[in-house]
Length: 147
Image (cartoon, rainbow, N blue to C red):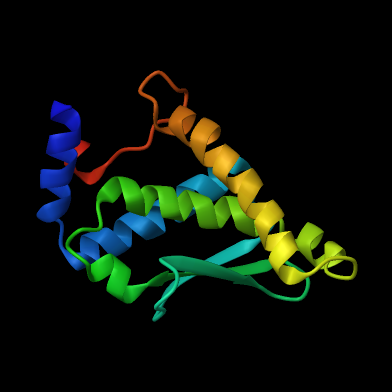
């Protein structure tokens, strides 16, 4: 509980640039940790009223652009743990690009997206906590943990 409170206070004093850097750092660290290194990932901002972030891939799936929503990052209620989770979500989901493209011939976009999100939510519930665990071989360092 105290750690959660400290996390929220630390996020409140993070600048917008620090939140953006946290998102970018998270994307690239998750890309490496997941082993999704056969693609080039670019991170940029966009405006959207419906998503916190999204991704796009080129026709081969070798170039992925992950876009965070500027208004979401700038929102004072956006906490560091949410930024990390959204970065994980987008990286994990974008690795299913080629499968989604193949299924596109058989199923609707909404059904494919639903199936992708089922897998991503499971990964958020199981894999992400392992990545963030202090007992893990791989530890994510939040900005306020840097000594």
